[in-house]
Amino acid sequence: MDSPNRVPEGRFSYEHTGNGCFIPFGCRHGLQLIFHQSGKQLHVRDPFNGDKRRLPVPPGFDGWETPISGAVFRAAGDIQHFQVVLVGTERNNQHHTRVIARVYSSETGIWGNLMSTPLPPKASSSMDQHPTKIRMWFTISVLVGHSLYWLLTNISAATNMLDGILEFDLERQTLAVIPVPVDIANNCLSQFQVMQAEGGGLGIFFLSKFSAQLWKMETDSDGVASWVLGRTVELDKPLSLNPEEEESLIIGGFAEYNNVVFLQTPTNFFMVQLESLQFKKVSKSNSLTRYDPFESVYVAGTGIDGGHDGAEFFRNT
Image 1 (cartoon, rainbow, N blue to C red):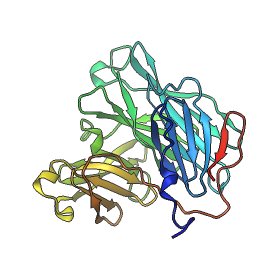
Image 2 (image 1 turned 90 degrees about the horizontal axis):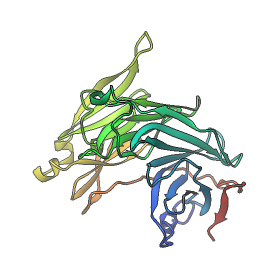
Image 3 (image 1 turned 45 degrees about the horizontal axis):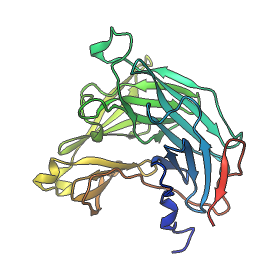
């Protein structure tokens, strides 16, 4: 099929300039966000019509010494403008102490004020002045309700242990770090996926060998939020895994609109719809990598709006 029913493959490829790597920060509302690390730029792209915008990374967000991540989105009902949330960490004496964030609006063409929240210390170092977090990293964001969420991991640990969930509330413009359920906290990042829980709200898909646990954040009558385990789903029989695959099953991606998690082994790639629990083998695989699904419905005449000061606009022809 021709565009717009089918997007040309080349519009998802990165520019090969030979001067640094391009890191995908995810897709949402028909837009793709990419970080050009050496150029210290964020690229917002519309794969349907080829429009692109380059945004300079604001001061305080390094991308080399301290990790950054971001998310692009459109406000409800606004098909012309977009916003970008950029998150990162601050360090003090080699320790990450705070998570910081700023929001860019294409309508105004400027970055908003800096926001921050402290990183909670580890239990073993609660009496220390700074938390013992030497190398932090963020996953690709997930939009649930009116908040964006990132898994926050300490990559200085030997197994990339999950350290918490970063929440950015789009309505309140606030940051918070949410602890993960204590029963599953000490596990590898590749076993976790933030998702929309059954009935709405924040949820976690946790992969535990041959089964998946679906957790949900619930609030009691006193306003206290806590994690509750919902369903546990056996995976070995529906996926028809052989013994070698059962030992190496990891999460390979997530599609937030359709609430679909992608599971991967060294030889196969599967998708699981979390509401219906329908399973499907997507393709063969010969490597373990992370996939960034693109989900969108294109409306003719939409695109990225015109440029502003500080943002460079250009279009593919």
